[in-house]
Image (cartoon, rainbow, N blue to C red; front, side, top):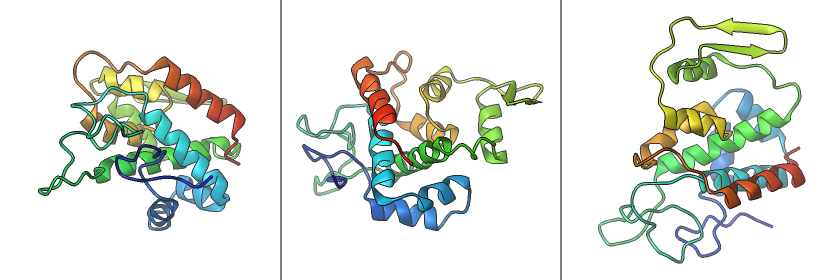
Length: 194
């Protein structure tokens, strides 16, 4: 079934179209881009759907634009001067980055971590990383943001978590919706990306 990126749509299941995601990765080199572009359209769409569902598991600022919309965005303040809702470009980027990370992590040969990811991990306070028999210690990591750490623990790519932080409510911690997380887990288990 094709993606439904209808803004404030009652049956929307994505913030971006497959064309938008493909254009994004085509313009940016990297492991996630290569992995995403190498996959079939159904696998790409599935990764985008799972990414959107992961984003649904987080508490955000303000209310939804419409009580009938299927997804969390647009929010009540995401409207043009003539009251037309829009999805912030940053939200679209979060979904695309997360979809690429999901596909890249599903490919056994993509176990390595690039320097950008290492920088993101260090910025949230990770002191060391181990991959197989290789370990890397950062020494004095910078200050931690518990909400960002919680996003990464939920499975978000560090870059996606950084972008998503702008929209997350500062009231309390990141509290995922358990029912939605169960659905995300089901999508990951039963609808393979590759």
